[in-house]
Length: 211
Image 1 (tube, rainbow, N blue to C red):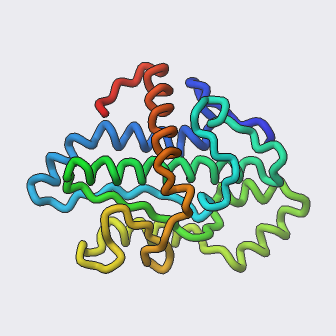
Image 2: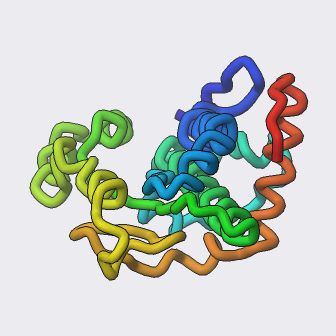
């Protein structure tokens, strides 16, 4: 639990899966998305964040060592790494929101959080605690089932643009309302730090993208 799993590029799994993979996927598709949006089509990018982004105290995103921080003093290191990666999602999404607005792009970007979901990943984290069956039972009483995990994503993708909770850069939370993000997610210096080092990671991995 203390040592994160690293992928072939030396990036821990949570950051690779939650942040880096979607970043590359979005940037590859962005020219097509913008071309489609310019034809008056309703084009949206919906990224899945987490309420946990507000609970991250380790805020360095400037190196691979930082991305692979072990959170060894955390009660649940894997959950702490998950929250760290989700803060990266928020920072990266907010950077993209500003970038597209500067270019007068018609692509809408939203970020959502599904709520407290008793997912397979959450259960795996709970199983690292003493008396895991008790914690799974207890949190099963207060957390949403997995079937509800997509509700906010579907709302963000499909609600009409004139809905008062739908706007470029909105953060959609249960029950499908726009809420403020944590101040750290809006920190433009931290957003730029993450963006610049992301380019370094991709360059090192031989991934060529237009920015």
